[in-house]
Amino acid sequence: MGNLNRFSRRRAHEVRIGNVVVGGDNPIAIQSMTNTPTADVEQTVAQTVRIASAGAPIVRLTAQGRKEGEALAAIMNRLREERCPAAIVADIHFTPEIAMIAAEAVDKVRINPGNFRTTGDDLERLIEICRRRGVALRIGVNHGSLAKRIFDEWGDTPEGMVASAMEFLHRCRRADFHNVVVSMKSSNTQVMVYAYRLLVEAMAKEGMTYPLHLGVTEAGDGIEGRIKSAVGIGALLADGIGDTLRVSLTEDPENEVPVGEVIARYFERREGEFEVLHPERYSPTKYAPRTMAKPVIHSEVTEEYVVVDATSGNPTAEWRAAILNREDERPVVIRRRYDIADRELVAIYAAADMGALLLDGLADGVWVDAPALGEAELNDIELMILQASRRRFSRTEYIACPSCGRTLYDIQTTLAEIKARTSHLKDLKIGVMGCIVNGPGEMADADYGYVGSSPEHITLYRGREIVERNIHQSEALDHLIDIIRRDGRWHDPE
Ligand code: SF4
Image (cartoon, rainbow, N blue to C red; front, side, top):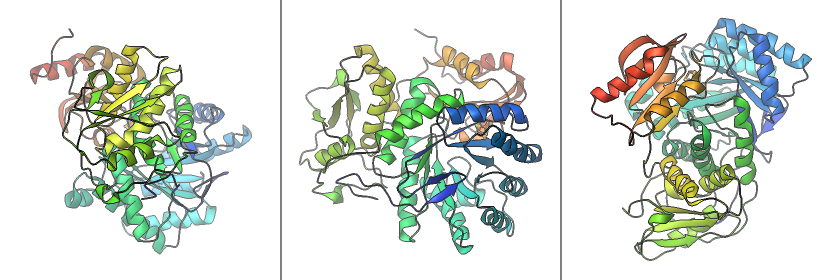
């Protein structure tokens, strides 16, 4: 990984995506994704224009079948008529033929090595189309949808994700094709951060400099979704890793763009030099908690904990050096003052600054010192940062997909209804996913799953096991609660 003592951006080679260049010294490009049915050209064009106007230079569209793949050419024509400058990416799962149709129309094609049914030379044929048309490729690995062969060897681990990406990168390199971006997404911030860091290490060993697309999948909505994204993405950007990013929220896609902008711009400059005297005490790719103390928020700090402030322009490096240089083993609470009145901004900045220290097990508590916010708001933000960093679970966790052209029901309203009935259940993870094709894999380690299986019909899961199939949406939430009740994991709200 980069320099422990100061901020330095990882050198990635430039990749052109339509009018946008990512990697090199280019600013981090923000992306979002449409959630309209892609075959509906006018609706998709209108939403793409809205997302681009919100400030995203790159917009992704799902193309799940031939109908959607073939609509892409018409969408590109209409976007040109609208003078929409956005670079367009087609998101492909499963079918190489659709990827090849898409590559004839769009600026970039995203494939998932976990489900790209590669037999023979179809990846190489796709590469040839990309080369001829100047189209970029994203090797987009997702935790939870690894190929069976990789899963059997590595399990559902960051190492498995890296093996999956490297296999495809080797094939790109053999074909002398380098217009490639890589992503390693997960809804689990710890898996996500370690997967990217391991990939950076693996690529560096082989002299590869592919740019990286960052994202936490299924982050949810509202302030929780923003904090979860800021923790994962911020932990990587703080070390100069990342060239383009998407914040995935279960909200209108236009909402994702300003959040992405805030996070990306926050890491453009990080000033200061903080010498780590014992670099051997730290590994970016191995989780080794420094103490076994309970992770705390500011109102719980006792004498047992030491409070370490960061006042510089690079709080992450400042805290890391201060903690690694300590000669005692007392648990550390990291504190920083934010003179901002906007609750959402305080939450995003604090999550982005503090996430890496929590994910690495270096800090055992957070203290967000923002005098403009109330005590209850600060407690809430701190608890959410601890939860997003997977250090302390104090509320139900929702792994909710952002929705896309495959979504089979109104996921925003449904998520709000599910939250209203279940958010008092601590220690539960509930997946709320738009489609049965990718949903069950992507909700990864959820305890229960609410997954769209046909229009307005839901299939309910316990872990990875289907409990009830294809029930109407009007009954699905009651049935989910019954299942939780039967499992003895329900209690009424206080
Ligand atoms: S789970 Fe399905 S509907 Fe949701 S974002 Fe993923 S592919 Fe789209």
